Image (cartoon, rainbow, N blue to C red; front, side, top):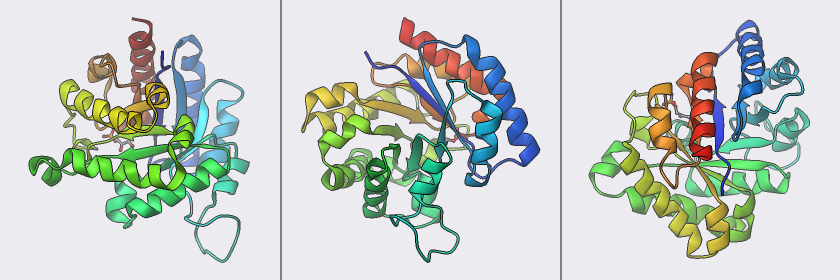
Length: 256
Ligand code: 13P
């Protein structure tokens, strides 16, 4: 039985006042939520502030990205995995489609970052997903397979014991256009199958989140799919009421 995992990706949103208020509202509201792991991924500049505002609750922290280099060094503007670990992060999002498309990250870059996160003892949230053009050209499985296999080749299947995958169809991100539960389930099952080719037990335990316009009104039906184990939430994670409702939906789906 996999415990669902919901993470909020705040992207480049917020201010000191806004993140303190959002974290405090989450802290207050999450007490009653059961059967789900929850994390928030604030902008790096606010991780420390959010940690203080969240206090000692069960909400974990994640970073949205890390430098493609280990250790320290002359990499102006970059934030290392050791730094986000030092700030208290347990998770790091790697390979978000915005990093891939806007910042040119390749499958190999993403694989390398995944290895850096694992080496630091943190859990990568590995994002994969196809663009609309790729879906229309019936390339979804080929694209997702290449993205997953690049990481499997780099870190090995055993490391997937400590990897979370997030399937985020690019055409569903920030567009209000969610993949149907059937479309999402099909790709989730495909991803689990890719890992199962190498290790069935690890594949059976692998948490695969869905991301892309998850809202309180569509979360329950998505999370009730057999291979969807929670979500990676963008826009709706900036609103405490909505995010709490989505976390609740994941907890309920688990206990069904
Ligand atoms: P939205 O929920 O805003 O579509 O964003 C999804 C996402 O990119 C999470 O990483």
